[in-house]
Image (cartoon, rainbow, N blue to C red; front, side, top):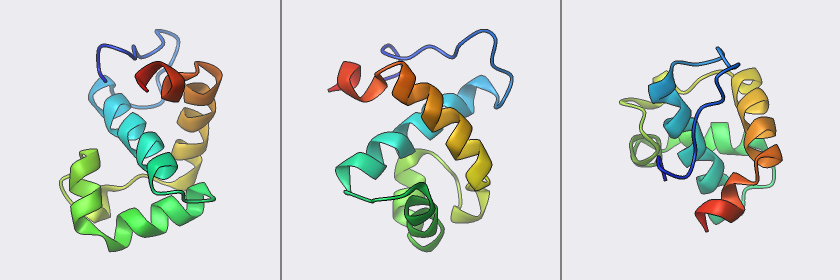
Length: 85
């Protein structure tokens, strides 16, 4: 997956290592059929295993919804899910 995506150089939203973690969460949202970003965040915060699979050391490390919205918008514009699939 890391080979498929590259953090846009103009982005300073998150450190580069978190870019792939947020991308994994983006894919998890689709795979799990979660209808909203809020439902994904709730799931990540209550499911320690899912949070770790995505790349966070603890569910408490999951970022704020606004971070997800910004990054997910960019990932959607870049067609990341289609490219990874």
